[in-house]
Length: 114
Image (tube, rainbow, N blue to C red; front, side):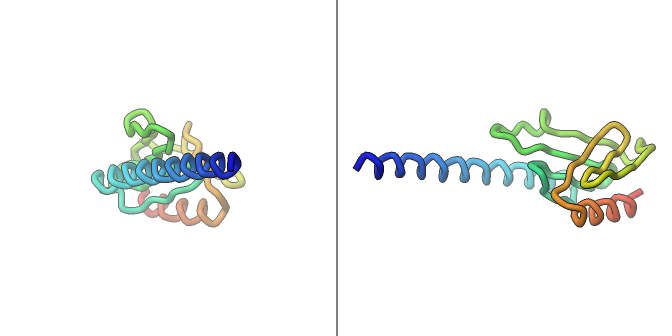
């Protein structure tokens, strides 16, 4: 009986954390859509997006504050682009991807914007 009670408590905590995370992702996607970021990818706990005039990364965290979790660089300010394994280095920014396919797809789209 005690084990059933513990199992139910753990299940409730896991479900509520999953719902909270989903609402965070919805907030981030809503922000990206409101700022006309048409092309984005979710990988390694953050959204990487190609907006009209800038490259944006918004990290997912327990409490989403877009202003604190936002990294952005304007296309006109980009001087150097390099890749290493599953990382994309754009000047001083490092964007991590889950695998090489995601990185290559995003890099192709970024080069199209430049």
